[in-house]
Structure formats: structure tokens, C-alpha cells
Image (cartoon, rainbow, N blue to C red; front, side):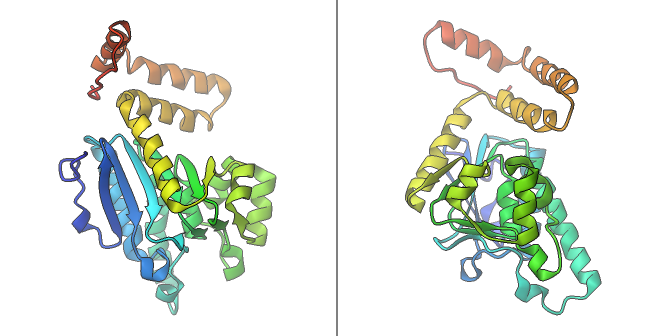
Length: 274
């Protein structure tokens, strides 16, 4: 199993996250404020920034991350409104800068992130989920971007990530009404990849998929992830140019040589990430 300390992540250092490494090269990051439905407070924002920026700086042995919530009730119920009660405009703005950086840290993480939505993902929780590379969800999960009902709007990537997942018209409907939607609807519209009957099956599927990703060549996986994500923000011609630049990065790697050799020797390749 992956050594969290060797990977630069010490679970004890995060007040609102619980980290574990149940499979080789796979780390589970669990939002861990179960007494308040894993609501997003300032400290959780700081912890998520630090966690994902540390992975970006040095992934070490980590090849895939599963992001989920503690308990069976919620993935993340959104911003902690009790903490926000009575906040001055200045304090609110300072806090939101942390949430903005949090969203970017998740989106820009070079290591693939599989979201395992184990319950309600509302407001900022929905935005955290939508920032993952793809999502699995338990069938009882509910999603919503309810910010317009509170006098604000999604500001941690929600207007961008949701629209890219479900399309402009559906995103406008969901964001402008603030209406909740089910896991089945999220899957039908393209936000969620698959739905599972209970949280045990959900985590089993998420970890299984993460393990498959982790067995593949890590440089290849990271380059492919970046090519897809950035290419979709470009014209087709520019995307093709970016793709070949990403591809050429792998030609001189040991992993490329190992992959071809293992195929010819009819064995599973042993990738080292170099």
C-alpha cells in the first residue's frame, strides 16, 4: 500500500480530512466533519488546498485519488452557514479566496481524482464533486447548486464545471432554480458516470477503478488527463497540437520501453513513473 508519509501527506496534519491508502498507489481523501454533514468551513478549504497542492508539487507514489465524504448522509452539505453567520463582507471575501484556490487545486491536480459521492452534495459540495475527473454516486445521493436561494451564486467553479458536464441549457436550469436533482438524473445528464445501490458498492467500484488507473503508466495517465482537460478549452487544431506535445513527453521514458517489452514478453508491465 502507498506510504502516506513517503508521499508527503500526513493524515494527522489535516483537521477536516481523513486520509488512507487502501490499495497500492491509491489514496482515499475523505471529507471528515460528519457531525455537520461534512459542511465546508474555512479549515476544510485550507486543508483541501494544502492536500491537493502538495500532491501537485510531488505526487510521489500516488497514482490515483478517491475523494469521498464521511458517513452515509452527506458527501458535503455545502458551505458552513453557521460559521458564515454574522461574517463581515471583508471576512466573507477573504474566506472565499480560500474556496477559489481550493477549486483550482482540485481541478489542477495532475493525479486523477475519482469522486465517490456517498450522499448529499449541495452548494460547495456539488462544486467539489464537479471538480473531480469523474464521479460515481450512491443512488440516494442528491445534488444541488442552491446559491441563488441565498443571495449569491456558485463561485468555486460550479458555473463552469457543471456546464461542461451537462451542457449550457441544463446548467442554467439547475443553477438558476437551485433545485436539487437525484443521482439518476445526474447520471442521465452526464455529471455522474455510474450509480450504485449502497455506499459499500460505491466505494468498492471507486477503489477498483482507481486501482486499474494506478496500474497504468503514471506519466501516461497524467499526460492524457491534462491533454483531455486542456484540449477541451482549445480549438480542435490547438488541441491536437497540445496532444502531440503531451505524447512526445512519453517517448523517452523508461515506462514506454517497459510497456512494449512487457507486451512482447506476455507479462504485466511494472511501471515506475520515469
